[in-house]
Length: 272
Length: 314
Image (cartoon, rainbow over all chains, first blue to last red; front, side, top):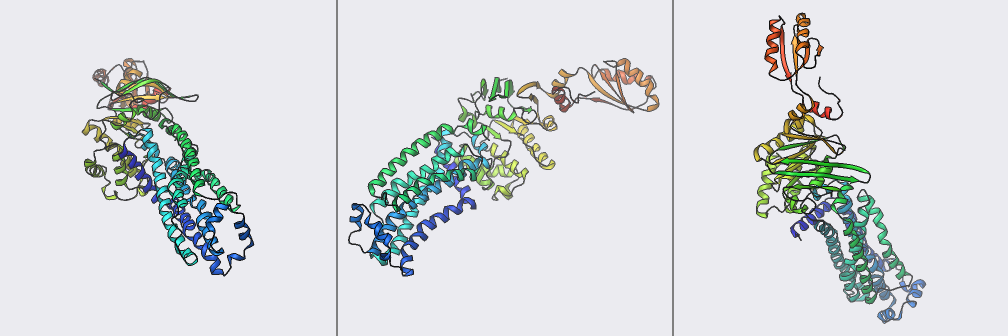
């Protein structure tokens, strides 16, 4: 494996992304909303508006429907603390996963389909890199920043969540075991899911926008997780998160295996 | 002489379309080889096949004694390609573009800065080296793409329509650079073009391609000789002496015909050696002449003749 060439591809793609406002903007805005604005709103809004969370019947019904394991974790907390823990630790967890998914999808769309659109792929195909090196370089250029943003995002989220929750909780909420598994095991797998989907789509579309729009459907499983939690169907626990990660890694492996099969010079250049 | 490029019945099909059809040719070290054909004749597909970027449907090729199918990466390390579109990252600067491709081509790390600066200098891009390529003119992009193709000092250079879309000034500049490349470094250049004047100026030998099939290979003079026997001669006459001259010219003409475009008579002679005797005969017959000019068929004449007899010289 020619790592110098792989690194060059990653470097090139990252510089190109960093200089594209259309690509960079969602990479900054979405994490800012999910990791800063949303947790601050969720915790601070009831206090700021003077709306006591304990008065919400829905909230009480919801808590009563929680599985015993989770109820045990919330035992001894008052309603405001319960709401804070539920919102910051459980409800926002699937939303956090949108970040690595979105980052990897956007960069992969720009790297695979965007390269075709900008007509820069041909010169790359004439280099002495092998198909495998090209493919790996392209994967890493989307996956590494997605994982990096997810890790950095977790640190930021931890800070915001602990700061906003401190007046209610009087103690630190983060990091906890479930979130550590989420960040280290699931977030990279989710990044791989966005990436694998985009690799498959990019071969069949003409440009970045088309790829990104088609690839947007990959967020649906995460939306289902959010809805599932809100409906009381499932709860993020360490076990569930471990299982979810395993499932995602399996899907990633299948997508990337298939993507690698289609990522051949001859086929790529014939589609230019 | 050992050929640098050798193909045998090289064929590439895309579904029902045959893009390259049984191509057999040889290109020798140090020559500028023109690959001529209309748009869609199969020139770009041939370049892709010869670089192992596209796999042939049948037939074989050897380039620098390597098999493009099996030895693609090793071959591409020794070959430079200027694609039809410059294929540059417009969100990178010229220097960044070259730096990344130096890494991709495996240029020794300690030589990279020196080579980049030298190429920027050669291609007159030093002043704009740190500007984003998106702001470059077409000519500048083409020069940068050419610099990129030379970054790893390739033995063989493929240039696919290097002056297409350039204004006359930029095209002339790029042509000058190609001529210097071949003259000063002795590199073999495989030049795809449909610009016949460019090919005539730059190429030692040419191959003419039509619908993926090779129509002819040789020097422009060889091809002309193969197509037309003899030599075309223009004789500009003082009109008053034209009847005598035309009568005499008809007698010496190879095909017994003279084309008269007053005041110029065009006649076909068997060879150059017949010219002095003809001039003597005309003068002795009292014919007065302004000019006698042998007309070598141009590559354009050859090209159109090969493509079905259009615009064949008289």
